[in-house]
Length: 170
Image (tube, rainbow, N blue to C red; front, side, top):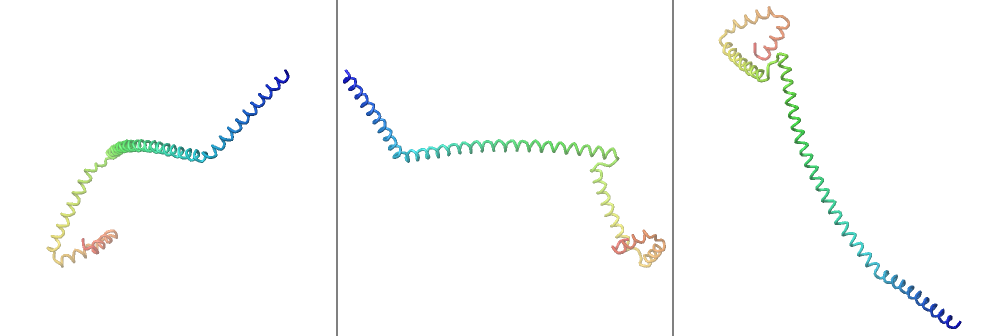
């Protein structure tokens, strides 16, 4: 019986050797196949990665442009509200200044403008009257009036007369 056990042992041993050999050969075959197709697989992975990067970049750009559009809208809205608030603040300030000037007895701007217009009109009328009165006076009378004015002049009056003589008006 020992021979039968030996045969069985030898057959089992041969089967194990054959299996180990097949596993080894399968591993070598897989390694060889990966070497051959490895560059193709690598190129395929690179191509897939580039496509993924492009899609991701496009999505990021779309998100960024949407965010920029929203921020521009917020900025525009904020600017509009701020301008409105500045206008209100300006009106409040003008009203308070006007009230303070009124309490101090200052005339309103429209009244000041009307007074300035009246003064300008009166100055023009006075200049016209002076221009009409000068040719009618005689030269001798003008010289006597000038001598009389000189004798009664104060230092301040002398400066005024000098200025008016140099500008041609008196």
